[in-house]
Length: 143
Ligand SMILES: [Zn+2]
Image 1 (cartoon, rainbow, N blue to C red):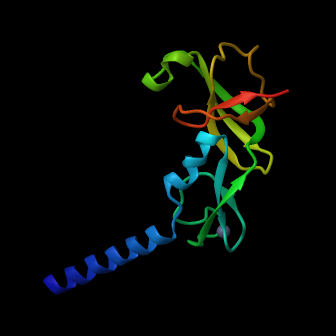
Image 2: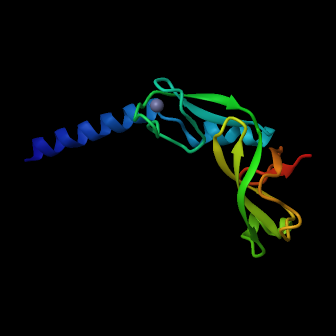
């Protein structure tokens, strides 16, 4: 029994290491946001792109993913206004927590400081990721 357990542990360990080598890490994707850049994974099989941290492609299950810089401009799909904020956002309230569809159709969540009503932000407004030291992806309206 002990030998079998050891074999199982070794299998899991090797599998996890293999995943770690092949997967897209948080840092790879979110590092770029400090410079106003968006990095996405791209599947080597089907070219599907996404910005969530992934071990496998959402679409085809392939675990060979590469990192690619994608455009940082898109439109607001939906949002909610936050008036009570956790510490990192307390100087930007109220803010909008937004879902943005980038021009290449990748959807991403982020936030826009100082949005207090529906007059400040419309569904479909064009937005761009900006450089920020704040957590998350900070967007601003563009005209
Ligand atoms: Zn794929």
